[in-house]
Length: 634
Image (cartoon, rainbow, N blue to C red; front, side, top):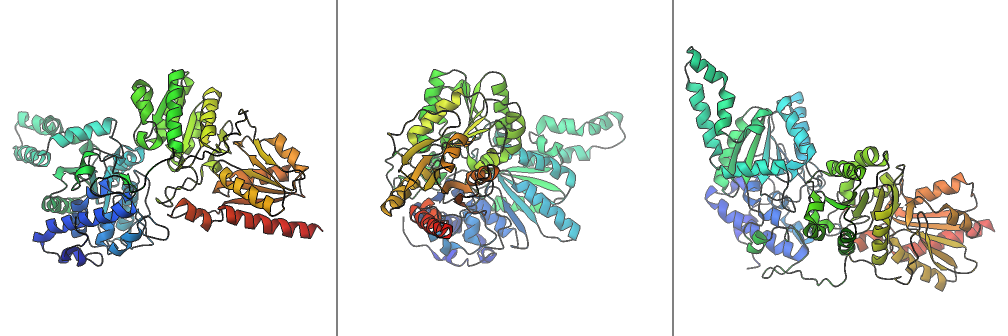
């Protein structure tokens, strides 16, 4: 594959420049865009297969719109790379998903052509419908389009928005990008329904022909009148797309999403129609790159890879926390036939895939439906099972009410295995796992834990499988820490673990989960500086180890809390409340956490350094505060 691009793509410098391209060159431009994507994403990593699948679709949307006056809302947004290219951001792709670089999702700060900062699933129809209604109220005439995948359409929020769109009556085009995939294979009734529609490629023509025949029937004859009154029933005999029609939407499709000329015709019809219109587009994930077409899951999100082989440029040696969870979950399933695993459309990403293969009858993929998944788990737990909800921290946010109302109030033994907790990295602000401690640890009956290393994660999962109440274990993305193996104190409910203690310590370091590794380095640096400290592996955020805290309140006058979570409502603030409640006025607390802000993309190392969570920054902050505090006391 050549590393140079032909001139057609070079003509596009800003939004709407595509309209200057000759129609005869559209297919050539599509090939150039795919080549551009492959050359760049293979170097930086990113979402590949989904973007290769929507090249012609995105071109057709841009040719049919006048950006930024017209509004395009991308569901999730990981498939918006071609949109970024067509709005003049080609040069930014060398820094795609890098620190201070081009975001892998739509960002209003990058371009006025990006209508929303998206990243989570099933939001586009609600967002676009709100924009369409606002347009109508203001008397404006611009087009509003939502682009949603068939996987995202299984989400409850999307179905609620579809139902509302049929009643609001605002002009809105909803492009259903149907590739029969989300990240993993789609599941559920909606997926089955769309599967039936896909098989009827002549649906739109059939629909038009049936309606023409019915509309030509003469009035007056009683038999004919009965038939006309039963028009909807007759349509249902021939037309498989009536679900959308029944809730007040016009349906067009399925359309070949790789035939740009057919796409343009369908969009032209859709934008002329009144009310909300579904344009059902059939695409192939990974289109144009054979390896991605054969294995779309593997190439959904990729690290830098070799184009010829598709293999990663970096060799994976150490096991990840996800790997540890996967193996332990499967072992638990072998030992306990009450263990049930639940995934929200991500069995591969969360590590639940092995359990699925071993115990298919005890694995449930609920689709992109986190709220349902949690309440479903509550039903299982109420009936004597031990459900494990395997989920990313950022997506658990979507089920806050269900955790509180359906799990915690009944004190049900649901295990939440929370992957990607803390700083996640290159997917940016919508995917960082920085809020789970804050929204979980204040819930009555909820136990919250975090392991210091891979061995403790396994121990915590076994502990959780025997705990009689809701329990959450949070762990980060990436390689699992293998240090401190010799510290394997049996887990006791609500008890921390003392790792190192120097005689006459004046500093107490309370490190949580992923921060224990950095805390160990800080402990050594302080010792080398002549400052004595005690290092504690906290283990439990909720409940706190009050006995240990009271003990060290008498020994150490400086407490340092370390966590990968926002400050507000986090572990550090729980310690602050403890000190205030028990009137420990003479203790200085240094709360090292993420400030209350949204964290953009970058490597975990870069972001930790930015926010002062690296060992060098922590050491400097402790040293400066400690010396200042003790000078003031003198």
